[in-house]
Image 1 (cartoon, helix red, strand yellow):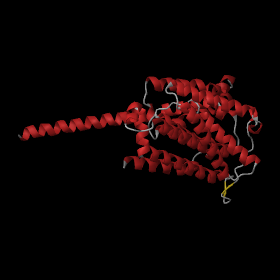
Image 2 (cartoon, helix red, strand yellow; image 1 turned 30 degrees about the vertical axis):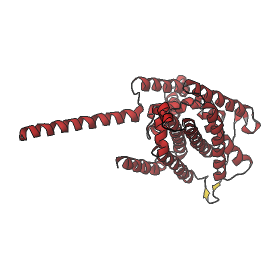
Image 3 (cartoon, helix red, strand yellow; image 1 turned 90 degrees about the horizontal axis):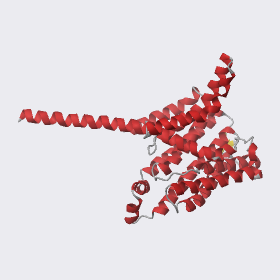
Image 4 (cartoon, helix red, strand yellow; image 1 turned 30 degrees about the horizontal axis):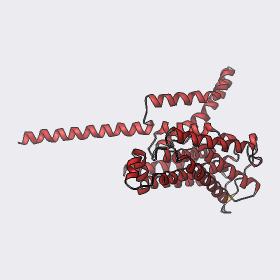
Length: 340
């Protein structure tokens, strides 16, 4: 009941957000939140650390952007094509990577993702270092004009809410329980008759598909796609988002994504503003040091908030509840003794 209330409150805030903030920036936040949630499905509930999720994020964006800009596809078909491309790529990468475990799995995903990066760099249809520019938004189903930022915001919100709801449903389904069992003790899950590799591959493909949905939607929102989205640093960024927010929690990746993306955007704006006000040119380069700031946040989280923001809050609430229960039991015991 409490979670339902919190979800409803979050949805109400999201519905009202474009009237108080810049819709394009808010849509970017939503896309990265879905990206982080999709990654969390893999690492937080299946126990697979992928360093190659940028490949799915960027490949879907390139496919969607190219089909919209060059072939004149409608937005819904372009996004579906992007999701299909990321799902297919996820199947290929997952089928190769799940043959190994631990750091070997992570390194295989990283190596294959770098191959995708160099393919995007060399392929003519991607625009190389310039990327895809001028991707049109078009009209959704021929009815909704996505050139209007407010209209597009609510479409993006609906996409992200649907993706989040799918993740919640998967996690709380029998399939999700098997994934948790594999994460906790894979040999035991195998001894119970579950095909662990098949479940891990399905989770990997589903995570890649949702990641592709986030990447395709982001390209539609911003109107361009660049090599940044397929670079290995993007894979590292989503790992940071998940760890900062709380790995293995539902709301943690969302909060982590909001925090990191907002920091990246606002730090540059703050530096420019300080440079103009003080006349000190050094402040203008403050946005370039965002990597140092996010690295510092990562170190603090690892040392102090090992469960992430949401994970630590949940642990604190559980300790408080446990303390109240113990106090209540003690009081009942004292009353029983006095009555006797």
